[in-house]
Length: 148
Image 1 (tube, rainbow, N blue to C red):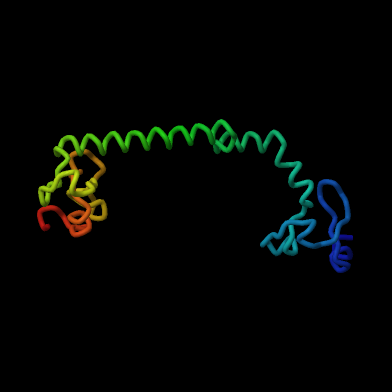
Image 2: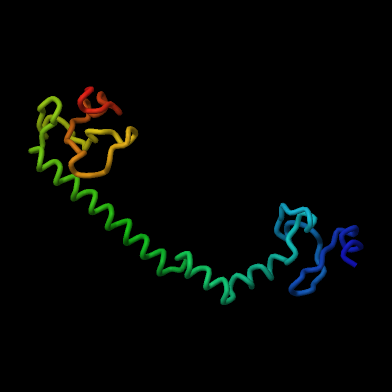
């Protein structure tokens, strides 16, 4: 029965048992050759299946629910605040002065630089950070502080 339907360009959905045209309008494309390039269930049944209990468990496991999305957004905002606080602490520690050329805030825009670059294995610790003006930071690039 299945081969005859396939020859006519039709397919029977495994779930709702409807016979539908074998096109991407009714069935999802599938790369497995055993399914002749299309899924064995129609798009409508696939949508219904996603709303079942099993899919909800999957959402919980991978935090795809609305609560999970909101939690991730809150964590992102907290991390941003932590980064800004850390940056301000570094500026305060270095007295808002570029540690390479000695220029101060009103003249230049300050940036946080790594003494030992991350590309060379440097860590994200407060001891590895230093205040630099934009020109010095761009000039230093990914060179170790002692070499600069």
